[in-house]
View 1 (cartoon, protein in one colour):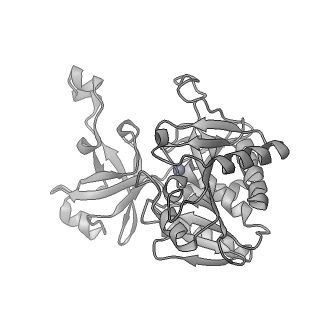
View 2: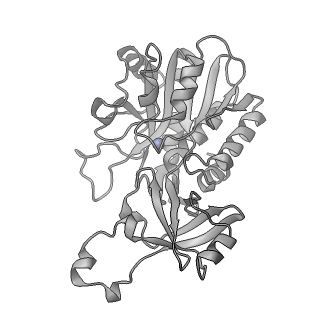
View 3: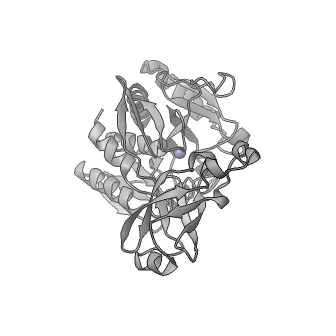
Length: 342
Ligand SMILES: [Zn+2]
């Protein structure tokens, strides 16, 4: 595994709708493989060797969860909204980076210290509406001079690190792991297969960019390369999240209890047949909550057979996602075989 590339992908900023940094990495790497590239009007990074009628689309969303500034108070503290699914508890006292007009600004999410909390306050979750970002400004005027404005996005400057023998940890593992796989698939890409780094998956129930790109390209089938919740840690029971790290990619049969993609029968059969033939270890997943880009593509135009192949990730949607190199390799093997046969 190319850990240096994975580190760059994980540490790049790309809060939904403000994805230029990650998009540039994707475009540059696609070009390095000799592919034609385009960043469309929606911010999707599209790459292919040659394009014919009804191509196969293989997509990974490039965006990540983050925050956006909604109010700057008199004292220069910033209030924010969440961009994407974030558990409020993971935000408290995090380091953040405000992407201001004069460049990135270091900041922290402040809160009341435990010393002066009342007993019942200590037991309740602090909601994000009660948190604020401290950028070290003395008042609103100074904050504005530093380049902060309403609508600026806020990311997390978490470092990517390797752990143990084959594990890694970092922010935005959902879905920079998928972006990494997409870049490996670019090597020796066949005709009429389109690789897309899709925009704005995290800020809708279902992916936005994947929908616009699929409407335009009318693919014969769609594969979402994404991540999923790994439930193999002490606080989750196997029956709640029966997907395990190191046991191969999860093939999502159904997403969001059927509100998302219900993978079309033939594409499921074909995928399983390919996985068995290629001797790739895989897991079957039936998802209660959560969906992927496949959910927004399967019912575009006359219906597009879609399926999500997901890398198990612990602590997903936090700055400390954990995944295994083995699963990344298995994902890559399975999706590359699917590209030969779909
Ligand atoms: Zn995702």
